[in-house]
Length: 174
Ligand SMILES: [Zn+2]
Image 1: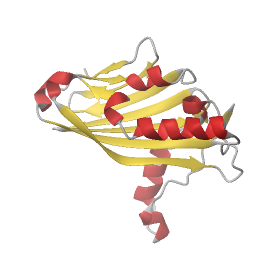
Image 2 (image 1 turned 45 degrees about the vertical axis):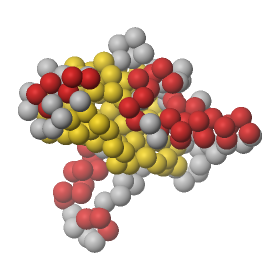
Image 3 (image 1 turned 180 degrees about the vertical axis):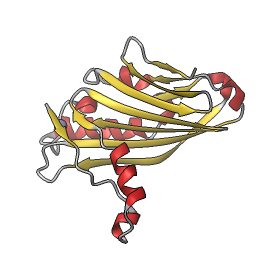
C-alpha cells in the first residue's frame, strides 16, 4: 500500500509566512509512505555525518495503528528501547571513531490514525573523519518487516543513491 505522505514537516518559515526555501525543503523530504520500505538520507560534512531515517512504523513492528493489546504495547516499548541505542541500529566503520547523537526520534501519525512514520535523525561526530568509509544498517537485524531502505548520500566525494537490504546492508561512500 502506498500513500503520499502529507507535507506536515515542521517548517518555521512557513509558519511565519516566508515562502520558497521552506517549500524546497519540504519537497526534498516528501517520500512515499510505502510499507516495508524505509528511506535514509546521509550528509557527510567534514567530521560530521547526519543520517535521516524515515520508515513506516509497519516496517519496524508490523503494525501502525495505536497498540491494541499488551503484546503490541510491548513491541512499541521494545522499539523505543532500541531507538535509544543508535549505535546498535546504524554504525559507521570503526576506524573513523564516530559517536552518534539522536537529533530527532518521533512517530508521526496521519490524521486518520491509520498510517504512521518513524522520523529518526542521528548526528555522528567522528574523531578520524579521513577514515569515514561506510555505514552499516544494523536495523535490518531487528525487524523482519523492513524489506529495503532507499539510501541517498551526499558529501565532498559526490553523491549516490542505492537500495540496501538485509543481505546488502552497507552503504559505501565512494
Ligand atoms: Zn502505512
